[in-house]
Amino acid sequence: MFSRGEIDDVSQKLEAITNESLTWINVQKPTRSIIDKIGQRYSFHELNLADCLSKIQIPKIDKYKDYIFMILHFPTIEKKEKGSTTTLRVNQLAIFAGINVVVTIHGGDLRPVQEMFNLCRQSDMHRKMQMGGSSGYLLHSIIDTLVDDLLHLLMKVAGNLEDIEDAVFDDKITVVKEISVLRRDITTLRRVVIPLKRTVFEMTKDIQKFSDEDLTQYFDDVKDHIDKVVEALDESKETIEIYKDTDFMLSTEKTNKILAILTILFTLSIPITVIGTFYGMNVNLPGGIQTGSWNFFGTYTTLIVVLMISTVSALLMLWYFRRLGWVAFSHWS
Image (tube, rainbow, N blue to C red):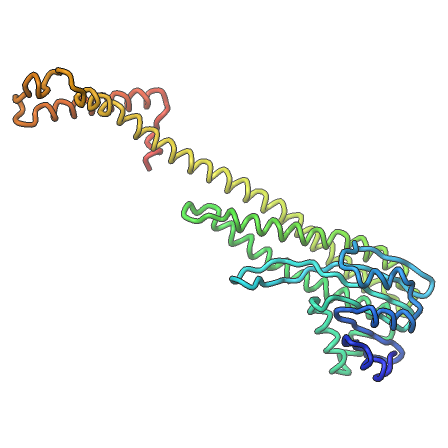
């Protein structure tokens, strides 16, 4: 474990706690000086140390005689500066697990890890409960805490799915953006959980050598939780795809109804438009000004006749369209 003087010498905060013979070092926002000190203290491979400073590493596990090194990804909720919208962000967690030592290195956004570390530092009871007496047990506690946080995120996704289900069938609400955002979140979670399942499975084959206690049941429980998350995400993916297709079909049907109504109205207005065009020409027509207006219905006889002819023509067209099945009364409802 680092002395207080060594910790104060580095520019970034380096935290360490000890329970019995086990030391947990937690590094937030690592710098080259901190990584070099950790490497010198525990003789970790330089390639693994370099991976801790990279932000684009894929999930993996490297196994050595004295320790194992893992890169894991976990999601966190990030609020945008403008507005109240949130998005999922993938954060990297690097873990060294050796005999009597666990080192966690992350960018400071994995709040479950930091909260767990603070509890262990402040409470002897939590320190004994979470850290146990071996690095294998502590590693289980860290991963189990992060997987539990995954379950909380999954519950939020399920809640959003229920909200979208109610909104999809409401003609007055548009949920295209909400569906797209939820599809993105589900895809992000799947990109995190599927490699996590594979990495944890590989880790359980070798972590036992760093613990005298049988950890099989503990890690089986973690793997069971991960399997449930994967199954729930697969179900959510299928559900959101159904909602997407449903929203598309309903939107298309609504658009078709609108276009059908507008087309019918335009078509029914053709007779009066044609007749009005003729009477707007400078030619002699029955009932026109040049030939003398009709007056058998009064002063507005010509107008009444034009409207009657147009109305009858429109009704005949409507009857014919109805007979062909082009028009249904549901279009007007």
